[in-house]
Image 1: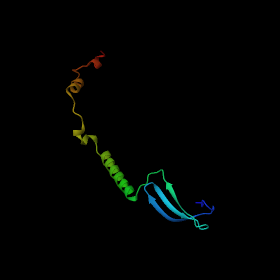
Image 2: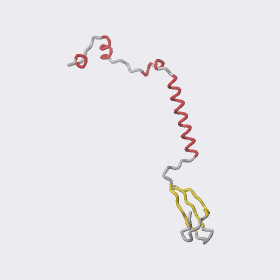
Image 3: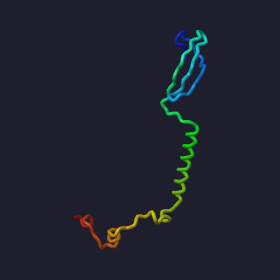
Image 4: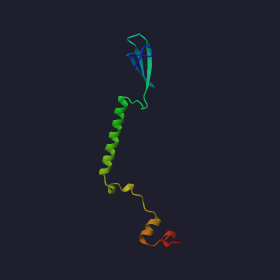
Length: 103
C-alpha cells in the first residue's frame, strides 16, 4: 500500500479480523503517517470448525446413500404402495374406466 501523504510503501502494524472483513493499521516509514485500511471479501468467511462440521455432515450423507444403494427394493415390502380395488380390477381385466374405453 502506498502512503497517501508521501507516496512511499507502508508497513502493516496491526491486522484484525472483523465481522465485515479485515482491518489493517498501517504506518509510513518515511513520514511516520498512520492510517487504517479496511478490506472486504465478497466470499463469506468460514471457520475451520464450520468446515469440519460440513465435512462430517457430508460424509454422513454419503455413507447413508452408499448403504441405501446396496439394499434391494424387494427387501423393503412396506415401501411398496398397496394396490387399490380399481388397480386390482384393472389388472384382472374386469374393470374399465372412461380413459380405457376412449370416451
